[in-house]
Amino acid sequence: MGSDPLLTADIASAAQPSEPAPAPGGLAGRLMLPSDFDEIRLFALLLWRFKAPNGFLSFLGPEGGDPDGPFKWDFLLQTNGVHIQVIRSVNGLELWWWGRSAAPEHVVEYLTRNMDLHCDDIDRVIATLEEYALLLNPYARHKNMAALARDELVQLEPKPPTTPVAPGTPEDELHAFGRALQDYYKVIDRQAMYSMLLVTESAYMAEAYLNLLYAILMRPVLRQSGQLQAECLLRKWRSKIEHLPADCLHVAKSPDMGDTRIRDAKWLFGLRNRIAHSYPDRSEMKVGKMWFFQRFPVFPVAAPSAELARVLVNQLPTRDEALRAHAVAEALVTFLRDLVDPEVAQTLDMVAGAQPLGYNETKAIYGVPFADFTLFVPGMGPAT
Image 1: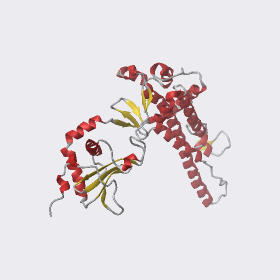
Image 2 (image 1 turned 90 degrees about the vertical axis):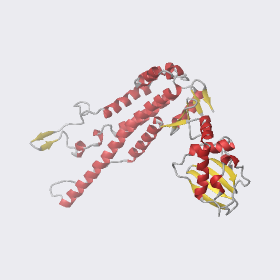
Image 3 (image 1 turned 30 degrees about the vertical axis):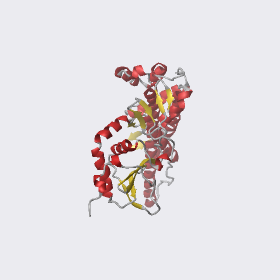
Image 4 (image 1 turned 135 degrees about the horizontal axis):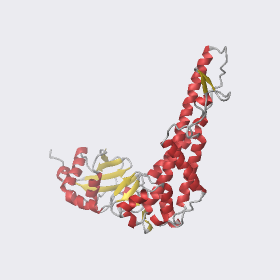
């Protein structure tokens, strides 16, 4: 029995398939390629041979491809009696073959061998593709984190235990009260955690949106100078807003620095800084007072001692401050968006929501990798 001709076949002689899909029950095999398989070089090999994806799955979405669809692209080819389909889906790279039986390792070796055989052709094809860097989008990330913290915070309702503590209270009731008090403290600590997270993520979200405006709209003359670009980005938030019309394209309005949203933003960033640079200052961090005679504690008022030991209003920030911080950050984002030309604002919204954010290394423009590739070109307005 001779060896499989697939093992020596050159993909240059592969043909368009006579069968665009296997007949019912006619599939000879299917295989999911390992996650570290060199997809870019396999795609370039198939593109070199067939000029464009030619499988029917490639035409299910919009013309020219759909990066956000369940199937990204597929190629069909026929060689030595085997029909092969290479499918790129959300799950990875999958191979289907039919027409005649073939061992899975032979189908894979056929492709990898041709990737080596045509390495120069592959390199030339890759050089023609638009390369995108996938970037963490700080604004989208912090916005999502702030929303998560807010949703968790509003569901927490710490309630102090109601078990009375009085002379003669049975020991089992005192133990139950102690356990309930510890549970109460845990809920308070969770509320403090989410309040702190909400304030910090809200402040990060607002500042990240401001930085995103600079990333997308910064004037080319500033972008092309590392020193000038660094000077713009290192300014404090208020100075950045003041300089937006001078530093960025498509900023249609001069910011009103007397707007209440700017005033509230000052409060937000001040609160964030108090949290970030916490120091047990006697004025900034004072939440109450008490006295001692020997080890007998004496309180200023006759309220339950838990209200001084770990009371809700003694958190930094408080629950109300945290919820206000999120509303202030959202209002500042709206203030900044309203400064942008209306004709580019919608494209900016798409870029702001992208996660990950794409940067086209070939054209030096930002884009949305997993969408319809609506791009924003600095100085040229939206383009698709």
